[in-house]
Length: 399
Ligand code: AMP
Image 1 (cartoon, protein in one colour):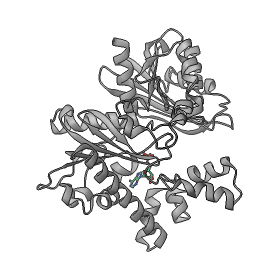
Image 2: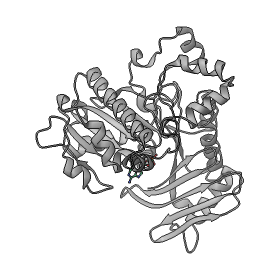
Image 3: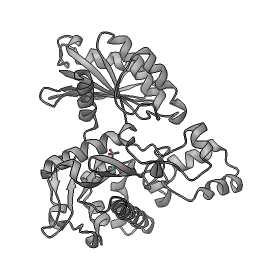
């Protein structure tokens, strides 16, 4: 079956077409600057379209362009759009009511929209993508796959915040967790890779990219994670603060006369690597600046590696041990510096990496980085959220 996977953001729409009989990527594209000009990129085999300016006013336009390109006589790889058997949509927030993927009907879409208040930036564009796609491809199933649903196994003591309980009841303020599709994918692949039953191992999974989170997975079920009510909690990230003392927020709002929106912008867009370094939001730039002796870039490296270690140790304690440590996403998969910094000194936990392999490992494949005398397997597992969404889409249709 051919599955189209759609990841729709506020001003961009990414898509991939996968042949699920072979788990193979056939084509991928991205429409950017939706509503403010428009830019289109696409790749299918050797055919590449790179950042072509194109009028893309709405998400529906973006999907129409995607379909036209997939069936184009030159760039396309489909003879007929009806070759697509299903569409899988990435939805960031499923709230408490969507605990597994679901086939979208009008009624389901209305129900999904009730969660908008929990993810006002992420859910509305995704829902626009679903609506546009359902309009253009009305005859095939559309499946919503939620980033949060991997975390429905987290116990109440890990998801209830110690604020008045009535706010959980009234506003559903609780830990939800994010990057669930990625953590679900890499933990499954990791267990297969080392030939262990996922139901019998304890995994700490580090998804380190522009957005970063760490999740504890015990016997195949998530038991805790660093992101919370929103994807702002936990580790410091490219531009996000991660966890800070909540009093800093009210203090700054008072002292700097900031509105809630301004404060949110500071925490989401002006903090993290960028905030501390004053310049660099990209990890590669942090590493180069640090090599050139820039003190605040070095400070970023120290803060993030200390935070990752705290969570690895904390989650090992939560699970009563750790068998597997995973690194994934842009930084986790590509940065030997980060993997070295984040594991340095964790020998007491049984975590020890092969430093030479860490610096010279192949990219884009699963790698076992553990030193020969390590008790814990440290693995690099490339994430593939689209493949996971396509898999979930096929599974739900079959069931
Ligand atoms: P993601 O959000 O998963 O795409 O990850 C983006 C982050 O990965 C950015 O901070 C990049 O600097 C980082 N990254 C990507 N490629 C590399 C690389 N080759 N070495 C180090 N960091 C990288």
